[in-house]
Image (cartoon, rainbow, N blue to C red; front, side, top):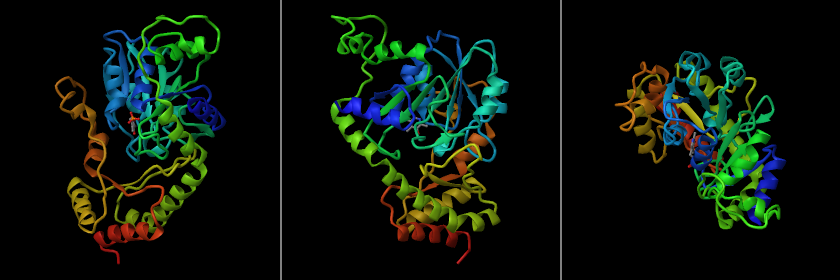
Length: 345
Ligand SMILES: *Cc1c(COP(=O)(O)O)cnc(C)c1O
C-alpha cells in the first residue's frame, strides 16, 4: 500500500492527516467542495498565482476577489485582503510563493474572529515552514503539489492536508467519489455506497510508489537544492541589489525550501532583454504568472482596481534554472551570464 506509506511519511514530516490526490488542483477543488460555497459567496485569492488557486473556487460558483501582492515579494498582502473582506467572504486562499511563507499572523489578524476559512495553496511549500509549522498545516486546509516542476514529484500528484478534525471524515468521502469506501476498507461498515458529493481525487498506487521514493530521498534532494539556491544568492545578491534589482526575501517567520530563485527586474523591457540574453547563451530562464484578473477568462468579469504589484511581477519577474541535480558550474555559468548583462565582469 504505497499510498498508506506516503501518508505515514508525510505525517512524520509534520503534515497531520494528509490525503494524496492526483494533483494540487484536485486538493484545491476538494477544499472548495468542503466549504459548501454558494453562488455569490466570495473567495479572496492572490492575483499573482497559478490558475488553479482561483478556478477551483470559481467552479463552485464563488465570486473570486483578487488581491494584490506585497511590494517586496509576490505573496498576497494582508492590507489588500482587508480591503476585500465583506459579509459574503467565505474563504481567503493564500499562496506561499516560491515556498516562502506568507505573513500569516497579519492575515489571520485581518480575518479576525470572522467565520472565514483560511486555505493554504502550499503547492510550492514542501519542506518549508511558518514559525516552525510546515506550510499547509496552519489553515483549515493545505494543498501540496507533487507536479514534476516541484521539489518532489509524483509525475502528477498532490495532497490535501486536513487540519480540522471535523473535516476529516467528509474529506475522505469527497476524495472517494462521494462514497464511504475508506470506512469500508477499515472494516467500519460492511458495504459502501453513495453518501455525499465527491469525485475521483485519489492517485493510483503507481503514482504513490513513485512519490514514496521521492519522499524517502527528500533530505538529499533538499540539500542539493539549497546548495544551488545559496550559490545563486551569494553570487548575485549584493551586486544586483546595488542596481535596484529585487531579490527573494526570506522573512524571519519563514524558512527557505529552495523551490525557486527569481529576480525582479526594474522594468519589463529589462526583464525581456535579460531573458533573451540568457536564452541566447543556452540558459532556460522563464517569466512566471500572469495576473489572473487580466486573463482571457477573467478580464471581462473583473471590476476591481489595477493590481500594480501583481502586474509588476507579471512583467518584471524572471526565474533562473534550479533543479535537484544542477551542477555548481552550471549555477556559476548562469550567474555570470546575469552579472555580465548588468555590466559586472
Ligand atoms: C503548481 C501549482 C499549482 C498546481 O499544482 P498541480 O499539482 O499541477 O495541480 C497550484 N498552485 C500553485 C501556486 C502552484 O505552484
